[in-house]
Image (cartoon, rainbow, N blue to C red; front, side, top):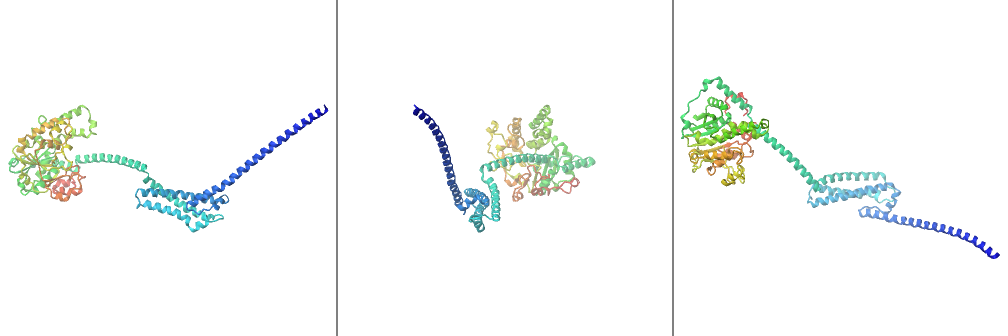
Amino acid sequence: MAVAIRGARGGGSGGVGAGFRSFFSYRIFVSAMFSLLFIATATVLLTTRPSTTHRHSQRFRSGGNAYMHRTFVALNSDPLKTRLDLIYRQANDHITLVKAYAAYARKLKLDISRQLKMFDDLAKNFSDITSKPRYKSSLFETDGNLDEDVLRQFEKEVKDRVKFARLLIAESKENYDNQLKIQKLKDTIFAVRELLGKAKKNGAFASSIAAKSIPKSLHCLAMRLVEERISHPEKYKEDLPKSEFEDPDLYHYAIFSDNVIAVSVVVRSVVKNAEEPWKHVFHVVTDRMNLAAMKVWFKMRPVEGGAHVEVRALEDYKFMNSAYVPVLRQIESAKQRFYLEHKMENATKDGSNMKFRYLEHMSMLNHLRFYLPEMYPKLHKILFLDDDVVVQKDLTGLWKIDLSGKVNGAVETCFGSFHRFSQYLNFSHPLIRERFNPKACAWAYGMNIFDLDAWRRKKCTETYHNWQNLNVDRALWKSGTLPPGLITFYSLTKSLDKSWHVLGLGYNPSISMDVINNAAVIHYNGNMKPWLDIAMNQYKNLWTKYVDNDMEFLQTCNFGV
């Protein structure tokens, strides 16, 4: 029993000792494991560092640099080497970018361009920096510390080239970035179109005002002539009609205008170039407002060579009334609608409405050309001249031309697809489409020889009236006298040689002087009339040489010619 008890006690104290021993063994084991883990981690870190160093040195060697493995290992010991590494990498990056743009330039076939040469030179300059003996020995092939002064100089050269590279790339980016180029081009086109549209509107508006307004000198001249008539009524008594005015054997001209100086130039140019001026008769028709001024002018300055001038007013022709003349009826109707709708304020802004206010006389002076047989019933032929023409040769040959039974002798103006009937008439309208050829050649008003006997036989005035009545809503043509003229004399026009009548001196600055000098009649059609300040200088002297500068009122009114 005693042994058993002692054995039990001994066993108890032995169990306690075994527990302590197992506890301390566990701690030793854990400590050993942590120690092994630490050693393994340190080993991995130490074995990884050289490989990283090797990669960096391999990168620089592959870039053509003399960076050695031992210099990179020393980066931590020399901060200047870190700085050198950053500078070198920056240079390499820009070399790559410059070469990329140079390659793109070659792809675009810009081999001879200034930019391509600059790209190649810049890439070469970057590479040459590291090859300089001073930098090579002091920075890239040294085992010791770097020379800070040399590094600073190296950094300056690299930064200068980097700066230049960035500027060149920024400039090239705009040229090589297609999307940017397209967008910039679109923006430029849009801006230019906006400016062009505004310029065209402003130019057309200014040109229209300049062409339609009466210059101060012309207004002064008309006032001076009327004043002369009032001051000396005995000098300007009405003369009896001359027999020459109705003599069909003479050469008759029709000129319809309210511009005194323009009419005088036309008459003077015809007479000065006529071989037998006493056989020429001029029928001048103006409005009542300018009748006195026109008569006084030709009284004060009689036509040379014995030529004859008849001056009459539009109102003297009693058949010119709204009951007979469709245009006059349409103008009166339009004016009534205009005033009934109370659009006076808008009329000052709308050019089409302004015409209804000011075109009653001017429109009728223009449309008088459709009533020549009724105005001159005893004549067989008559030459119609606009007031903006100058005659340079004797025109009697026009009366000798055989018109082959046709009514109108005129110069055609079409070339290619320009100045065809389709440009003047509305061929979407069935009445026009069914009766006329859109490709038919147009001709010019301004110098037209009319066979009045053929006119009467063909009843051209009636044809004109019929079409003018159909165009009451301006659905067949917009405005003017040429479209109804093309219709009225369709298939009744004889084409004349182009040297008889040269047009465009009022808008075309590139007409050959040889063509002009060879022309019998030159025409200042367009807005740049020769009596205006906007006239083209290269043509103006052809008109001014026929101005009667000895007329005292021209000097008084400061008429600049």
